[in-house]
Amino acid sequence: SAPRAPDFESHVHPFAAGTMASDDSDLFNVAMLIDELKNENVQLRLNSIRRLTTIASALGPERTRAELVPFLADANDDEDECLLAVAEEMVNLIGLVGGPEHAHALLAPLENLASVEETAVRDKAVRSACEVARGMTPEGAKAHFAPLAMRLASGDWFSARVSACGLMATAYELCAGDEAARDEMRAAYAKLCGDETPMVRRAAAQHLGAFAAACESRHVETEMLSLFRRLTLDEQDSVRLLVVEDCAALGRLLPKEACAAEMVPAAKKFVADKSWRVRYAVAKQLYDLCECVGAQVAREELVSSYERLLADGEAEVRIASAGLASELCRLVGPEAATAEIVPRVKELAGDASQHVRAALASVVMGLAPTLGKDRTIEHLLPVFLTLLKDEIPEVRLNIISKLEEVNSVIGVDLLAQELLPAIEDLAEDAHWRVRLAIIEYVPLLASQMGTAFLFQKNAEGEDGELTKLCLRWLGDRVYSIREAAAVNLKRLAEVFGPEWAKEHVIPRVMALAENPHYLHRSAVVRAMTLLASAAGQDTCLRDIMPALKAAAKDAVPNVRFGAAKALGEVASTLDAAVVEGEIRPTLAELEADEDADVRFYAGQSLQLCEIAARG
Image (cartoon, rainbow, N blue to C red; front, side, top):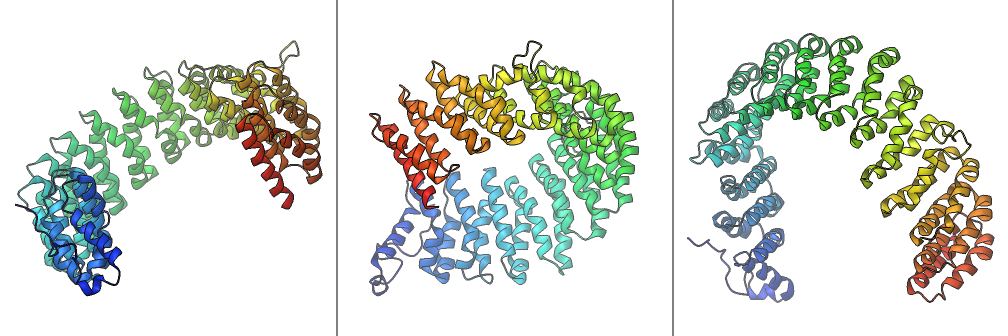
């Protein structure tokens, strides 16, 4: 049947002619929005739905409740995008239907939306319904929202019962003091947990933790635990993996002893589950559960389960488990970690899956503070060295990115022999994102290891390989690398000071200014611009300004407008007299350049000079 339109059909609706005369334009726009709610064009309907608050404001609370909301409830839109938009907008209408006393009127459209097939629409309708319920009066919530949740829980279609699972916790919470209603809800939730449709049981498992949190503690320790046990035995792995998340959620609601007695056996059973997805889920949740039961129970009961997950046959499970290594070792302490977890970590360093090794490399450095210096050197150092020599760039990069953690425990001297070759290897990797990542770590590594080591000269007194690489990056074929290389030199100068930059960086950068390729010369201009602020005014005047002036006369316009931009930026670091005598004349020449881009950037830089002079 056709959707029932609100009681306004002509272009003078929804207002009387006398009212409309006061502001014809606004009212006509509202009338158009109302018409577009019934338009065949999806985009027009969607635009109008997004403006429901405008329509409701124009109609007023009474007509919104009597005409607009029933229209939205009866409309059978077949476009999920429109239904989703309606579900989103309902929350914004609470104040426009008359406030908390009348907010229950908005539940009718949301009840219909909570029963549709599209999951995204149902989920949004559930969230909006809960938000509307919290905006209602306590009496209104008990009289209207709780019955809605119960109706959906007994609905014929599985989609309604799925939505009911998401509403029950809020309904239970808002029915405080009504024991009879709460008893009915717990009974309804128990029925949902045993529903014949797996999708409903899955939703019940997903929301069990939230529903239990709303229940009184006496019911948590009896009825909720009973439902939890039933769901752990479900034949569908999609249900069981969602129950895994309830372990920690329920564990937080139970006394420590009851938590250990109930949740530890459940976790052990999940670790041995035949479905890898369930084992993956428990690997992601194991640390939270260990926190719930406490360090002692975790050491005695769950570390062995963690060992089993680290040795799981599925790479995805090992990846998830490896990610917990640092946190779990910190929780159980150095003795248990060294005896039971570290041996498995050593095995993972040689895992057949590169993704497992990469996951391990991103956390293994974090074990060092827990184990202390002696244990780290004895047990973890061989792992670090193995991963530093890994054939996969991501593994080596993950280790290098976490050097700061191990540096505070044992220093990096013990890794130095393997570290430089690994850095040099990554610096020349075929994938530009790998090169970019290692460039960004160089200043951090330099601050930890010192320039004497990192930029050491070879036996013939020539620049070391890393020094050459820092300069070679300025000529990389990828723009992002050239830009990062320039920023890298600036950051190194900030770490080690202007004297170091003057002696070791600026002369080498200046030597590249004569490169025949204009992209390389442009990169040099950018590097000198950034170095100007870190090198100090004297160095800037003596070395950088002559180079920028030379670049301003380059044969290639790209280099000239790069120099024009650079002069504007450098001006902010120099005295006003220097700007007037050195920079303005050069920019004035560039403002008369034959190239339009050069003239444009020269003009911009002159404006910056004026701003700096006024400042």
